[in-house]
Image (cartoon, rainbow, N blue to C red):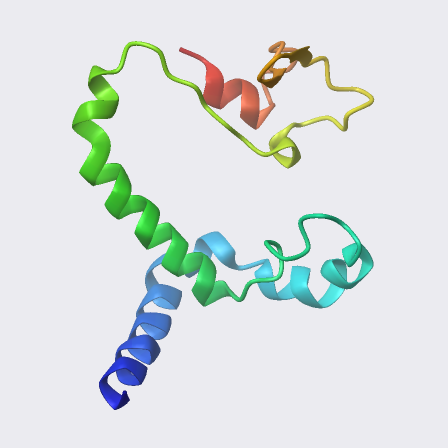
Length: 119
């Protein structure tokens, strides 16, 4: 058990140093924003500490490397992104409803969804 705890603490310190730049606003979010969003459906997923995000990032990188070859060979790809990545709120976003969800209408070159979905 002591080895596991030591490893976890080392991971937390190393991940903070190496990928912490990507999660620097998590603590502020947890303190200031999350309490106001308590009754939203995503409250469970949006309440994690920075180290948990770091662990998920490392896990995603491992899976990306493991499945890259088969992904590249796949003809049709589907990119699933959270709605919060859109530049505009629902009322101003021009995305179209489809059977799979909303599809980017490429209404703004500044939108992260537009940038990521360009082929």
